[in-house]
Length: 264
Image (cartoon, rainbow, N blue to C red; front, side, top):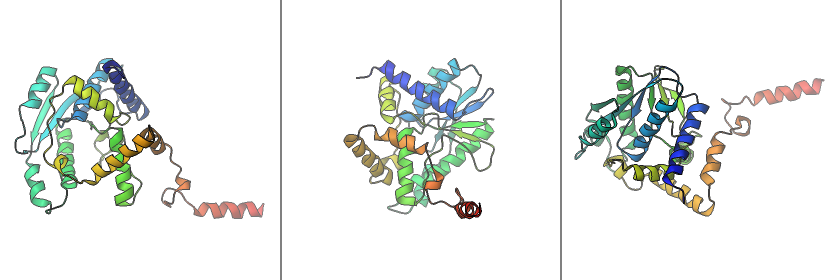
């Protein structure tokens, strides 16, 4: 049984590896940390604050929450928590909850539209707050689950990038928890006693494809322990020539090589 000190060190080490491997943070960065009120974003904020203290470089952090006007949302929780923590923060109010409910057909999941609206609002907020980077709380399990969701339901090999630039090209998006296990985050979150705010929109819907994929991976882990680590390594060990995407690999060159060798 691992101690909370060991779990904390694991999370810090995994976050540090992601930051280093993907060159996430540079001197002078102003990073907007997106805080939803869930265990992942609270952990993200703690990890970012840790590296702000120990890093040799200097960078700023501002925590931002999007109040989507969901009924019963406890508006005082995050301001109280962040004030006690002494963290610079901004609460953005936008009634995307109403838009999602109005635009989503009955029986359909709200995740896609909710995500697009939230993402656009946060990107705009980052620019207004003079942030050049934005940090999200997606962890290793999210990345693996997204890969299988795209594989099974979208017909493409795609996961979540630990670092990418938005379509407008004026903001870099980071996922510093990319190497962190959800199980470690859960233990850490419980120990830290974060004031969790449950989502009663997408997070409350049953029979979501993501839930099914999560259960599938969990079953694999039961039968074959540490399979998630193997899958995560696979996402970092890609051979385009052994797949079938002609945009990534020019298979026509193989014939030219064969023909040239035959002439020698």
